[in-house]
Image (cartoon, rainbow, N blue to C red; front, side, top):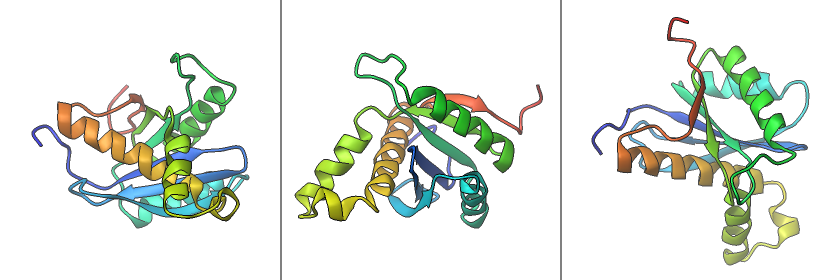
Length: 157
C-alpha cells in the first residue's frame, strides 16, 4: 500500500437524470454507496454538501469513454459537471475512466437477484462504487492516483 494517500474520497457517476455518489473509508478498504442525487440545478450543491459531510479530500468523477478510449456523447457533460464540482467543492477533482462501470453495476445487481427495473434507483450508486473501488485499487497497486487531475484548488497556479 505504499504511496496510497490516506483519506476519504467521493466517487461520482454522472448521468443525464441521476448522479450516483459513493465514498470510501480513510484507508480505502471499502467503497460504499451514499445516495442517488437527482440531476438538476441543485446536484452540485448536494454533492458539495456530501463532500463536506464526509470530509472528502478528493472527488473522483467517472469519465464515460468508448471501449476504444474515445469521447462519447456523455464525455463533455461529465467534464463540465466535474469542473462545476471542482469550483463548488474547492477540492481536487479527478476524471477516472469509467468504462463498463454501469455495465458492471447492472451485472452485480442482476447477480444479486434484482431486476433492472427494481435496480433503477440504486444502479447509479453502485456504478459510483465500482469506479471508486477501481480507482482505489489502482492507487494502492501503483502508488499513483488514478485518473487525470482536473483541478487542484490547493496548488498555486
